[in-house]
Length: 248
Image (tube, rainbow, N blue to C red; front, top):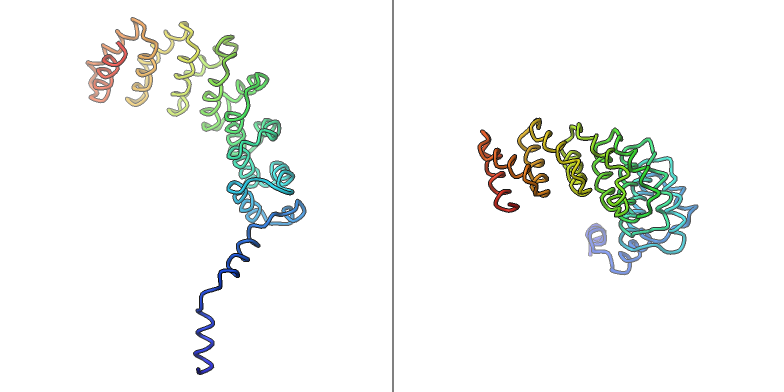
């Protein structure tokens, strides 16, 4: 066989299985903390992503701890995602401290960990503060998390904190506020929600208000929804008819 042809054959020949397996093993081998810290941030994130699929072993516990306290936001976010996916409750305390991070994505990811893994009432004051967070995704997740605490529903410690947020403008956050007020089951919220139904800025927001009003099943809510069957908006009319049929 001519030398040039032999070279091309070897160049394009498929790699043997053992060589491929060795490459994969080297790519996904367990790292020590020292090896992890020497990586650049992209490689650290890649390693943390790998751990989501295989779980922790050897030095990985210490690596997660190191990643959660890293200076790079992308590494911290990836570590929080790992804690969430693998439900690593041992890191919840650290996640709580990250709720005050300057990075909004870190605050949001830390809150998702709290939402999934933490049910101690000592977090409630912090959740109340997060209703003022400048990042809408954090505010949205805060109300959703608040509804997981049965003691708060009974004591209503932060009921008025939620009620006075009805001036919220983000539509995805406002729906969580409506749902939280209905979750509380406190009738003192109904007049405020009724008033809001007259001042919605869009048809989609009014639909959200109508749906939550229907859930409370009061006579006033029924009357208000019935008047909306005569709305100029076809969307509002159809939604009102549907809600009356379903709830009353």
